[in-house]
Length: 120
Image 1 (tube, rainbow, N blue to C red):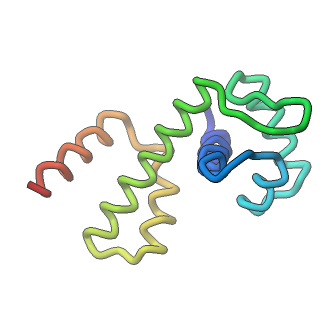
Image 2 (cartoon, rainbow, N blue to C red):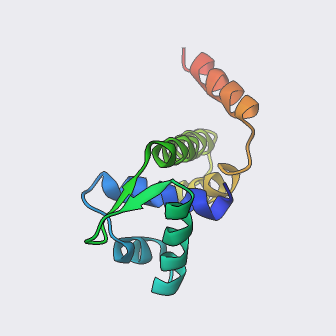
């Protein structure tokens, strides 16, 4: 899964927590054109990460939900950690968005353990 796919899935996850999701919602949230989102939706659907019903509503499959939740957790943890060490909220969110796609599972798990141990 490439970074762009993870970003789409994460966005769909976040939007789905507020209600039903359609391609236009993803366009508005991400600031992308309809053709770009349509192409990405097709790729994610063919990859088995989402399903789209006949009315155009998008649902994450189990695999899509796994990837989205994993990416979103990384974003939340990294943003909070950066803010905790003094980074502004805006910069923390921006930097977390860049790192969440590249950080290894091992490093992320160690970071979570470190954060948990320092809060005791």
